[in-house]
Image 1 (cartoon, rainbow, N blue to C red):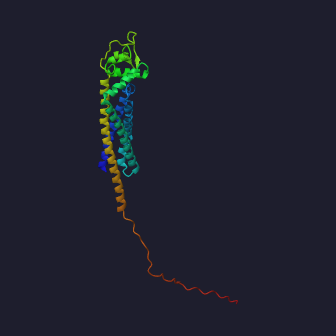
Image 2 (cartoon, rainbow, N blue to C red; image 1 turned 90 degrees about the vertical axis):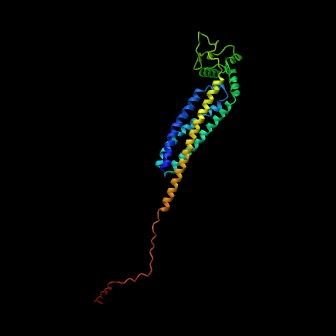
Image 3 (cartoon, helix red, strand yellow; image 1 turned 120 degrees about the vertical axis):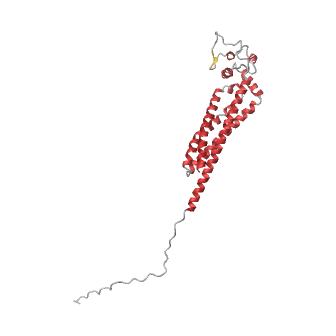
Amino acid sequence: MRSSGLVLFTCAGLLLSGGAILGGSAAWSLLRMSYYFWTSDLGVELSSSVLLIAGALLCLPICWLATTVPYHTKSLSLTATLMGLVSVAMVTVGMGMSSLSGLSRALREPAMLNNSMLRAMAVDAFDPAVRSSFAAMQTELRCCGVQSYADWYLHRRTLPPACCGRVWNGKVIPKNRGETCEVPMYSMGCLRPALAELRYFANSLTALSSAIVIVMAVTLFATVYLLATGVVERGSWRVSKAPPALRVACLSHAPPPLVALTTPAPLPIDSAL
């Protein structure tokens, strides 16, 4: 009982720190890389990473229950609740890891990302969301175009202002009253830095999620052991408790007859008769 309680305390600390790191890093990365939702076809794989954030949030009640159950070993409801929450969190994080594996498979074929970015570039002049996303991506990654800045000349006559670093929050800041770019500041295309960023995102979250799943599995096994030990001890206590002795009264002889201690007094006789 003490060893399983110590294991639960250790797992609670690891899940609290690991869940905070996983949820914070996944949320920040999705917000920072939101331009990929419009500039590529990886929106489904990236949005599925929300499952990792949900699994990280479930670590909070798991930590609280893991530190409470060792003090209430006879409470089956708390132990069953902890087992259920750990199981749900493991499934949620596992589904998020499967989405990351899909993202990794897509990144093994750069041609898919290249074609999707070129298709998005073709509608840059008509879709403001795509335009601002491309501007944010080129400013963040310090690149221009997909393979090179020459890709823009297939769809427009001049380079976008983001290639000259004149974009802030998706709004063009004119330089010398001009909204065009003649000489690009970044000659490298965005495909290679985008692949490197997405690979780092997938690998780091996969490693952290795998560690958290292992800690959750240990927590689940310790909880099951604690529950089984409590049930066995409760059953052995009931068996060891001796039942009360049964006392039966037995009458072997008939009760003696009732005998009057005094003789009844004679009735008075009326002398007038």
